[in-house]
Amino acid sequence: MNYLNPILVLVVAFVSVFLEAWVDIFRELLGTQLTLLPALIVYVSLTHSMIVTGVLAVCGGLWFDSLSCNPLGITILPLFLVGFFIQTYRELLLRDNLFAQSVLGLSACVLCPLGTLFLLLNFGNTPRLGWESIWQFVVMGVGGAVLTPLFFILFDYIDNTFNYQPVSQSSFRADREIKYNHR
Image (cartoon, rainbow, N blue to C red):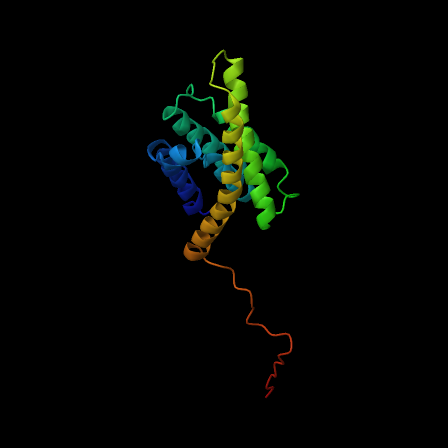
């Protein structure tokens, strides 16, 4: 098994969570912060094993919760459930289709915050909800629809650059004739 891609996925998750907490440009311009972890979960669940999906959900959820106001660990379950659902039905999904990637990214980037909100409300927390929450879900969904295909392009480029590609042609030709000299 090649360990480069899963390690790079975790590094990208760590850096993206850090940048979400540190960079305020999107929060000031759009009124919300774009979340990259659900888009990354879509990529991982379509291309990697369930173990990598689970590790990303646990590590990414803990990293995200440690830098936000969420209780520690509350983001893990929504990320894992989205990844598990996509992992279960990935034979039916069009992995290489740009439109399918965008729809899955939009769905994941809306369902993960909704799942976290559901858990927060059930555990007795009172998050701020209002009409601006609808705008925030729309922005996060559109951001996920745009960013998910970019993750596929980025990691496919890295995979093609650093991993050996299978040889498509064989040295054997079907029309070749071998003559033996019998003496």
